[in-house]
Amino acid sequence: MGLFDRVSRVFRANINDLVSKAEDPEKVLEQAVIDMQEDLVQMRQAVARSIATMKRTEQQYNKNQGEANNWQQRAQLALGKGDENLAREALVRKKSYSDTAGSLKTQLDQQTNQVATLKRNLIALESKISEAKTKKDMLKARATAAKANKQLQESMNNIGTSSAMGAFERMEDKVMQIEAESESVAELGGTGIEQQFAALEAGSGVDDELAAMKAQLSGTSAETPKLESADTSAPKDAIIDAELDELRSQLDK
Figure 1 (cartoon, rainbow, N blue to C red):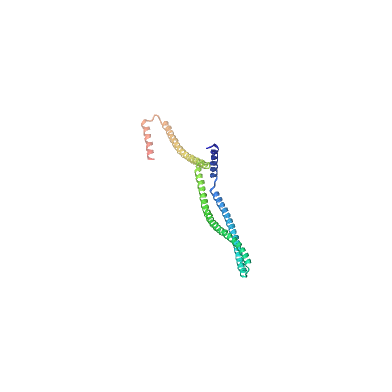
Figure 2 (figure 1 turned 45 degrees about the horizontal axis):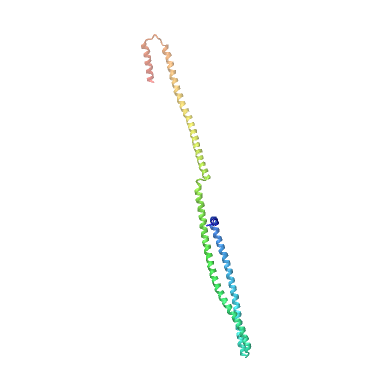
């Protein structure tokens, strides 16, 4: 195989691949139906021309056949009148028209067969075009559904990696962060108030306890000078008796 043949084959293969990729089923089907309809128009025109030709041939045949019949009658008339020469001339004319009519009859038969064939082909083409239109609509619907499904699948495949989905995920994380911060602030704020009230309550208890301790200390300090101011020369038993009396008075209370 020569270099030119290989290059030519590669070139044709690339062209066919490009054409195949560029083919849109809907557009190709539409163009195919248009082409078939154009063929139908041409076929109808051809049938119409054939019928017109057949009609003209039929008219010419009828005319020549009529003239032949007329000259046949004239020959009979001339011969009946005894004019043999005129009858012979009439038969010559009659033969000329008869020969022409015979030729036209052959053509007419051929044309009639051709017209019948063309009509059958025309009916078949019309049926094919009607079937093609129905099939075209079905294939277009299937192609449309297939394209829509393909786009849907591509969208579903790309949605996980798309920037829009990434933005949703980022914003969801951000909203969750904001919610967490809001809850934290709320918890901190509530704890602060509770701590303040707890501090106040604790402070009140401490103050009460401190006041009690002060009162006790004041009472002790008040009694101590009395004991110290007592007569040091008093007997030891008297001091004990005084403490006992104090205890009794506290018990009575």
